[in-house]
Length: 80
Image (tube, rainbow, N blue to C red; front, side, top):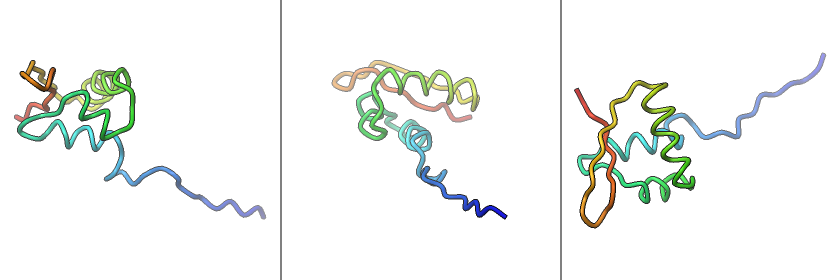
């Protein structure tokens, strides 16, 4: 019999990069692309892709965005 130990090198779901994005965008002040890049280590186009593909399409979250002076475009998850 073959010994096949299962090991996980991926982070726990509570500390995934997607979870970090969601937490940042749920803040009252939202999150800019630069803040999300710093939190995940992804490139800006990857953050935008995750917002569009995973968070909006796959998870069905409503993301609102606005231009904020001094911060650029800020993204928030609309609650309710």
